[in-house]
Amino acid sequence: MAEQVAARWDPGRVAGLAPDPASAKAGRGLAAPAKWSRTGASARAVWGACQGSGAKPYQTAVELAGPAFRCSCPSRKFPCKHALGLLLLWSAGQVPGSADEPGPVRTWLDERSARAARTDRNTDGPKDLEAAAKRAQERLARVTAGAAELRGWLTDRVGAGFAGFERGGGDELRAVAARMVDAQAPGLASGLRRASGLIGRGRDWPGELLAELALLYVLAGAAGRLDELPAELADTVRSRVGFPAGTAQVLESGERVADQWLVAGAVDEEQDQLRSRRTWLRGRNSGRVALVLSFAPPGRPLDSSLPPGYVMPGELAFYPGALPLRALVADRTEAVPTPAPRGDTVAGALAEHADALAADPWLDRWPVLLSDLTPARHPDGWALSDVDGAALPLLPSADPWPLLALAADHPVTLAAELTSAGLRPLTCWHQNGVVRL
Image (cartoon, rainbow, N blue to C red; front, side, top):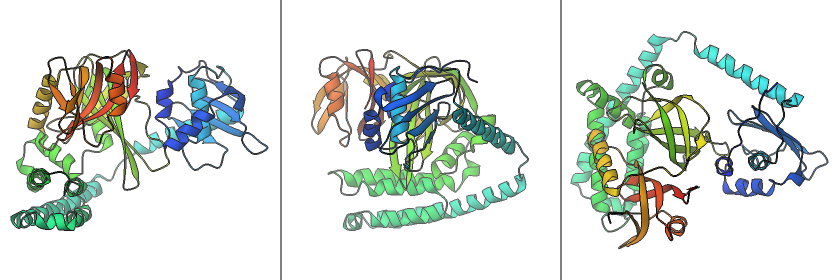
């Protein structure tokens, strides 16, 4: 039996759970008390019954810790529109607190807890270390061979000129990327696919393509001589090539940093039938930057426990590398909303970015937190200018209008990803409110 009621989430956090825009819209349509009966909320869950087109109402429950979802409707989406509507109703304070969870809800929650406990016990068992080491050695051999093949191909292909690239529209690069997948070097494959997207894009695409291929050439060379590199740089190369340290290893021996972590922003992407979320955090006391990744198949929810604009008191475990950036949440308490944080100037952010690139030259994006920004015209679109008059352009692919509307009458604080092509806006603090862009 639950002893207290969990703190309500805000609507933005609920919206971040939606598997697609259609589900988010349908969920908002169900966030009305008249559509629900027998609702309640405990420290562990929210539940209720929603009347649909059938004779029996749909029984819906959400475990808050996961979150996890259960609904008797036939939808294949997780969460379904009923779960989203119930959570929005709860976030609006229209679901009563209750210390008594209904029997079916309590049974479901207890079963989930028991399964989690069994999984924890199973992961504590002995491992076949010899077999694992053999598999790692075999993979390293395949990656090394693939990297050597890529360096040879790049030498020949760049020497022949880029005219053929434009005629083929990137097909040749994507074919080589497929060979890198076979060599179990997904990082090299990803770089080649990224390079293929540069062909024919803008007047300066040959220079941009050459820069991308040069970085891949250096990375492939480093992958072939890991034993000669300093330990931290070798860890960075392994991660960039595509085989970072395992989760258990990071949690056991990774660098731990406890702080008040500002959730600065998140980016959702879908590729190769897999949805991903990059969440950027900044330590209020340490000044450290961290990247937390989560993944889910289409139709399944991504991790929503780190909502942008919140602060999470907790401890992160960092993956090893010359620039420790990716991290796992090792210990945490509930994230809470925060007023607009104090950001940096454009000059300060660029200096920080330069230091990061010096440690990891393959870094393709960097989180920035900038204060007092106003819109400014740019020769190729829009830029954001700070109090010193320094400006950064927005990515040409970014939709500028939501941010421009917020910044039209008052300077804003912005969290964004800085790339070689410009800023990708993520989160905007405007008049003490937070907007995910």
